[in-house]
Amino acid sequence: MIYLDANSGEMLRPSAREAMLAAWELPGNPSSVHQAGRAARALMEASREAIASAVGAQARYLVFTSGGTEADGLALRAMGSGRRLLVGATEHDAVRTAAAGGEVLPVDRNGVVRLAELERRLRAEGPALVALMLANNETGVVHPIAAAAELCRAHGARLHTDAVQALGRMPIDIGALGADSIALSAHKAGGPKGTGALVMAEDFPAAPLIAGGGQEKGWRGGTQNLPAIAGFAAICGVAPPDHLAMRDRIGEAAKEVGAIIAGEQAERLPNTLCLVLPGVRADLQLITLDLAGFAVSAGAACSSGKVAKSHVLEAMGFGADAGSAIRVSLSWQTDQAQIEQFIAAYQTMARRLLRSKHT
Ligand code: PLP
Image (cartoon, rainbow, N blue to C red; front, side):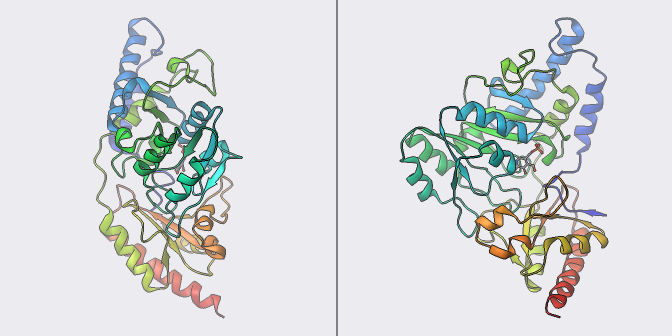
C-alpha cells in the first residue's frame, strides 16, 4: 500500500517512537514529589518547553490535551465565555461542533476567509471570539491569520486558530500570527495519536472541561500521558519535508484528465491536494484507488467511515461536486517513485469513471 493520507494521520517518526519507548520506562507520576516523580516532571516540562518554543510560545501558557479536538473545545470554552462566536465556514468539526450556534464567516471561491466580511461582523455589538484555522485539512488552504488578528485586535475581539494541520508542514509562530490561542495535535505531524496542546499567547483564566486533580494549573485534570507527550516533543522542531514539487506534479497530471484543484489560486500547504472530479462520486474514486493499493481520503470522512459531502467544498461553491473530491496528503515518507505510481493509477481511474458516467 502507498500511504497518501498524512492529513488523517501522519506516519510515526522514529524520533517519536524512541522518545516514547524511553518515557515508558519512567514509573513516576509527574505530580509526585519523590525522585521518580521529579524525573517524570522534568521530562514533561522539557517536552512542554520544546513544543512551546517550536511555535514561538512560552511553556507556561501551554496546556496538554488529548489532541486537537479537545484543544479546540477547551479554547472555545475558555476564550469564548460571554462572547459572540464567529466561526470560519471551512473549520474542522472539532471547532464547528464546539461553536454550534455561532455566526459563520464565509470564504471565497478559493476557500479563503472574506476579511471584509469579518470586519463587517466585528463592528456589530458585543465582544467576539473568532475561530479561524491556519490551514484547512481538506484543501490545505492557508488563511491570512495575521490580517484577521489585526482586525480582531482593532475591534476588541479574541482569535483562536486551529493550527493542527499546519504543525510540521509550515512555520508557526503564535506572536507573528497574532492569535490569542492555537490548537495543536501530535499525530498530524508524525507524533503519537491522542495527544495535543492548547497554546495561549498570555495568561487566561482556566475553564477546564475535566477538573479532576487540578493538573495543568487547573486547565485539565488527570495524570498527563507522559510517553505521548515525549513523542509529541520529539517531532517538534523537525524541518518540514519539501513536498511542493511533488504536490504540483500530481496536480498538473490530475488536471490533464479533467480534475479541478480546490483552492488552486490560494496559498496551500505543500503536502495537500484536493482533487475534484466533476460528477464522479468520491466513494467510487476512493474504492478504486484503494483496490489499486493507494490510501487517500475523501474530502471529509465521518467517524463512521462513510463519505459525506464536504462542507468545505460547499462553502467554496462547488455545489453538487462537493461530493466528488478526494484528498491526497503527502507523508514525510512519500517519494518520487510513489508519486509516479499514484499519477498512473489516478489517471486510469479518472478516465474510466468519467467514461462510465457518460454511458
Ligand atoms: N482540527 C483539524 C484541522 C484537524 O484536521 C483535526 C483532525 O483531523 C482536528 C482538529 C482534530 O484533531 P485530533 O484528531 O487530534 O483530535
